[in-house]
Each structure stands twice: as C-alpha cells, then as structure tokens.
Amino acid sequence: MEPISSTDNPHVRLLRALQDARGRARHRAFLVEGVRLVETAALAARPRVALHAPRFGAADGREAALLRRLADAGAEVRAVTERVLAHVSDTVTPQGIVAAVPLPEPVPDQAPTLAVVLDGIGDPGNAGTLLRTAAAVGVERLLCAPQTVDVYAPKVVRAAAGAHFAVEIRSASAWADVTAALASVEQVVLADARVSRRYWDVDWSKRSALIVSNEAHGASAGAREIATTHVGVPMAPGIESLNAAVAGSVILYEALRQRISARETETER
Image 1 (spheres, rainbow, N blue to C red):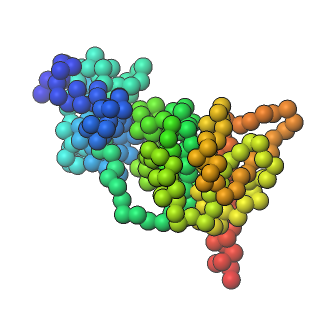
Image 2 (tube, rainbow, N blue to C red):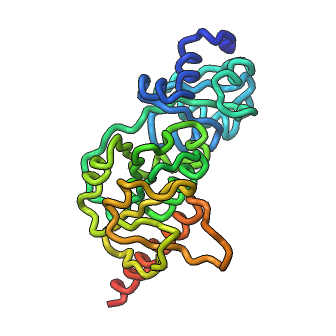
Image 3 (tube, rainbow, N blue to C red):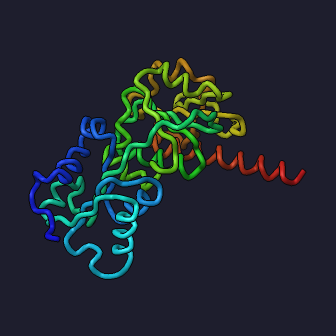
C-alpha cells in the first residue's frame, strides 16, 4: 500500500486536529509521538490511528514489533510521506511515528492516599515534569486546577514521558471541583516559598494532597482557601525561589521517603 501523501486524508486530519485543545476535546483523543511513547501507549491504551514514516519498521526489530502490536490492538496503521508526517507532528524533527490515543474515561471514584494539584501551572515542561514525578512516587491522582495548561497538549505529553498512563488525571473548571476530588484526604499541603515551615516536618504518611503553584504568580486564592498547611523548601541566602517542577519534585520525594520508612517500620513489628 502506497504511503498517504495527502493532508486531506481523514487519518491525517484527525492527528493534525489533536495539536489543538479544541480538537482534543472534540475527538476525545491526544497525540503521542516517538517509538518509546507510542510503545507505552500501545501497552496501556488502545490507540486509534498510528501514522509512520515510509521506512519505519522496514527492518525486523523494535519498530516492526511496535507496528504489529498496534495492528493487533485494532489501530489503523498507515505509512505516510515525510511531508505528511511533518504536518501531523508537533516536533521540529518528527520521530518516525505518531499516534492518536483516546483520552482516559472517568474511573470509579477511589480515595487517593497521595494527590497533586497543579495550581495555574502554565509551562508545559513544568506540568509534564510534575506529572512524571507524580507517577514515579506513586501519586494516584493529579488535579489540574483552573488556569493550568492542558496536560494533554503535545509538549506536556513529551515531558511526562509516559506518565499519562500511570496516574489518574482530572481537570477542574472550578476550585469547588478540586475540593470535591480531595474530600478523602486528611491534609492539603501548599508549597509556599514565603513560609518557614520545612516540607519534611509534615507527616506525609497521612492521606495528603500537595498543591504546586505557578512560580511567577504564586498560589491562587482558591489554593490558599483549601490548604490546611503551608510548607517551604529551605534555600541558601540570596536565592529567591525554585522552579515549580523542582520544588514539587523535592517535596514529593520526601513524601515517598516517609511512606517507605513507615511501611518498613510496620513490617518490622
């Protein structure tokens, strides 16, 4: 079968539309690029369409295995010209394969033991890094509060490196939705560079939620209203603040450290 060469092809139009938030909402899908991310998507979800470069998978190996896995999962798998691949790709240099993956359906409500709230995080790299860290430390739920970047945007998906398939993600149109989604937690901890209480002085073995806010504008009124305690990350004199993703990651790994320690202590009893 000849590679698709027209940008008017329905599969091509679908993947192109997923670069835009309105397209993602309309098609209930998001864009995944590159061998590693598409492999992760193929194992965790059911990609609808996968378009690849003409020579992708020509040699029997990892790429060929991926194409077979996608086809076995029911995806429409088609080769496209390099021009068409560049048209649907969000990267300057296309990575050989691009797929449309369904947005996750709502899951039955389960009380998280550890949650993260992104409060007005607008930078895709920060949002993706926080999502990646959340998956690494075992966060069960990530909430996107108002004014937060669309976490299914291509740049966020790349930065998260597959974490979209490991953490339950919810978007909240109002802070009331955030509050409802955190009804089961015992404490809501706001990362705040202005306070002196250190992040390791919190008992993270409790059911907890961590709010990480926009580093330029600080915490929103909604975040301050629902927070039950504020913590800071100590820094050397003269240093004003940390990148939001770095600060959030430091705190989340302290939560993991305390939880591992608590489990080990319980096992020894």
